[in-house]
Image (cartoon, rainbow over all chains, first blue to last red):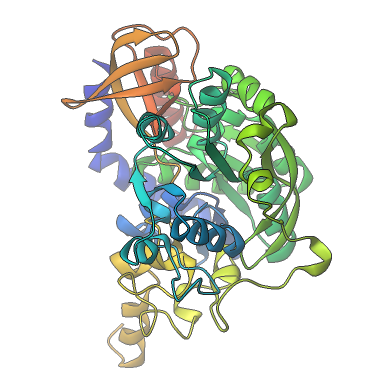
Length: 384
Length: 72
């Protein structure tokens, strides 16, 4: 059985050893190598399984803009809070439930706090579950529609198949990853290779990542999420650098097809159109968002509730003063560089958005001890 | 957020399917063509985004073997 064989593969300790040796061998004659990931789940794997500790000194793994919760602009959170307090039933994924806004709305800074203050908020596992619940809910309803390409098909199919009830409005904060990858690469500089998001790529296929590999002349590997997958991807990137190659390789072949998921993309194109969109703390990234087309405008929360999207010329950062979430998201800083990290900003009381979701870099490092803090302390006291 | 887990399809009804995740059965939206009972699909936030196949799994294993043997 395929499933059992995959389980067995995950436990392949001897392969981990072999890959570690290969990575060290490949990195030997290379200079400083910076490999960026674009999925919070890859950062989770890297930190949870201590993959940074397996790397030679000259191989640095950095996290990129791979967390849809972290980059959801504050205006959308503020509007959802406001509507929930005015009696509109708001459905959200658990990931965004505790996401703090910049400005408090009637003293409330998250949907979690809104619920505690009498707001109408429900946490759901999926859009389908929200649709089912909304059918029995009177009055106006709103879905807090976060996500990347991976999440968009659930919305697109539901609208196309006509299962979304009337008075159920969709607040689209859907974002596209390749434009953000391009943007991050233009800011960070000196990235040697990319670990591209495996589940996003099941939808997009190889094409947008191949373009990024070509435009930035670097190896890009679409990777699975087991520690073994990530190590294979790192080894592949190093091998390509050593051989002077750039281009795209799909490591996560068991799930990702060269041309992605055409059916899902067809539905997404029927329901959504690409627009310039705000990324929290970062600004407006051209052609990086999805909004409902005219055909589905009756469900559009922006139209129903007259929500104004920020424009590039009037953009001001929507992060709390001093919070380094934007720099961390772009791979320009690490959580330990933030003055709030694990001091006033903790998973229990998050100040910035990167401390909330299980895919936020700060939340991952806080939970599993990433960042080499122990190593730094060990060096300082002379025991490293 | 973009985490997906594998499950086995137990029933297909149009664009919806019941998927078994180690004993927990959930109704999901099918965003994949040609899914049938018994298939293994990857499900993210209630939507099946891709199907796993034996052939592609084999191909991936071959890729790993070749990488470790320095042939790729």
